Amino acid sequence: MHVLQVETEGLVARVTLNDIEVFADWEGARRIAQTKLDPYLVEGDNRLDVALTPMTDDEGNVLPGDQSLTVTLIRGEHGVDPGDAGRLARFAWKPGDIPVEPGTLTSMWARQFVVRPEHAHGRWAWQDAPARAPTAEDAQALVALAGEVHAALAARDAAAVLALTVLRDHELARAVEIPEEEMRAEQEAYYADWFGATDWAMDPFDPTALAATAFARGRLVRVTDPFGGPALKGGGDGRRFAFQVVATRVEERWTLAR
Image 1 (cartoon, rainbow, N blue to C red):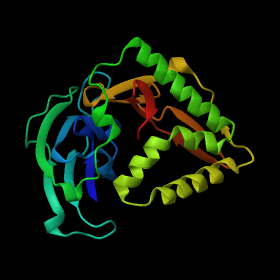
Image 2 (image 1 turned 120 degrees about the horizontal axis):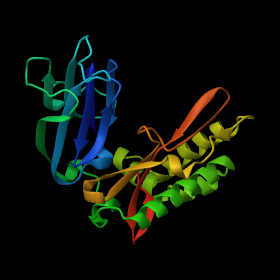
Image 3 (image 1 turned 90 degrees about the vertical axis):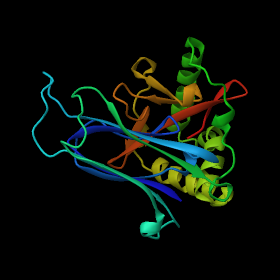
């Protein structure tokens, strides 16, 4: 597995892999996060980019407090510390290292690395999608897709949800190297757990409260709420539920991809 580990505090930070956002923090909170990168890796050349800016108040003044960022790219067996040999790259920043303009995300570091065939997982559907900016028609189709997922979730229709996530689940199973049947069983159990709540409900679907961000030259689009959070949310049994909508075009039809 390829894992991105990010430790950050007092900063707005964004990390992209192959022009796809794989980590972002807009709140400046102290965080340690790990993200599996394999679903976005391609065979051959890959590029990791890090951008940051200090947290500021409404007047643009840098907020007091500690500021730091450490990004580590790790490759190794799942669940096993690979040691120094598995740490492919590392970037650390603290105030005074490299000047950063407050209020503007500044590209601070980039790393090109090669993934050999034995460490890749085949070609992804999004790699073959047309590279173009989404149009107004695309926006309508993406809203319709989000609405279809919302309706299936609201109806507790796991079969309908799984039909909508066939491509996503197939590719994620490849990315984490588990049988597709095992991935489907995990997803079925996941939805059964949520849908079993007596008070299960989705938040109302509001197409006007959706935003979209295109990645990889328009090959992937993430649909979010106005603040960059998951597009679809709900809950039950005192727990909150979130569903990420990341889609690609397959034969000109928008399909859930991640």
